[in-house]
Length: 355
Image (cartoon, rainbow, N blue to C red; front, side):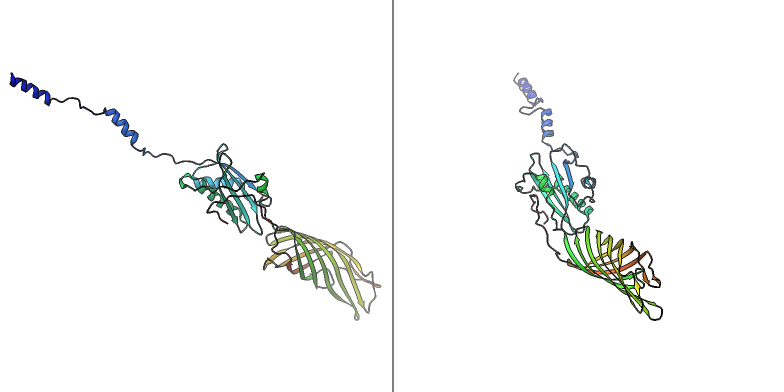
């Protein structure tokens, strides 16, 4: 009995049984799944922003917001502009002195606070290049994967931020005054090709000027018979409004003055005579510095009054109805660098903002 009992006891000890102190297998699997990082490819975070793009007076020819939005989408890989986004991007393009074009950019959070800003400048009057650089800066600011640091706390906002932004552009003090001295060759107006001189004064704006010119055509002589000699000259005042695009300009002029003739060994009648003419002017301006420039131009002179050289024996010479002039003028700008004080909207700058 003892042996049998001992045998039975050993059989029970060797028999497999339920492990003691272990969690169920399904619970272990669930815990492992919860603690294991999710390694499936998740979609990258996407930025969303409202876009406000404005062009100040003088920049109407710059690209509209379509180019900025298109370039932002190309760089980010998606279009970040959403009308209901909490983040708002406010941009302004405006002109500076000379050929500069400026842009200011700000990001505002849902509470209206400025979280980022930049100020960009294009020095070659290239608005397209400026807009492309704006898109690059906004892409860096918006892309969550770049972890851009926020800007420091902005300066206090003006009472009316929209109005202050429009007043931001730096503008030179206009008009500027220039004076010039010209020499010219005149043909088809007097009996012979002759030289002319002119003193020119103008009020100049960025793309427009209004000039006043005193013009004198040196005497042209014509031989009459063997001993008779007639000399004729013109003195006139010209009003000249001009439109200018970069170095090219186009003008219209009105000229009023007198034509005077004198005779040697011949008696003339009807001298002096009224001179009235008009016509177009076109040319190119070549600046040598902020103070000095040279203009090469040509006039088509359309005479409006009758002009003829007449003696007691009859008409000695009558000009055609039109003539021409080719001139070269040196201009001196009396106020080359004077500028009006800048009024800028307060713009917070990041640590790396360009100046």
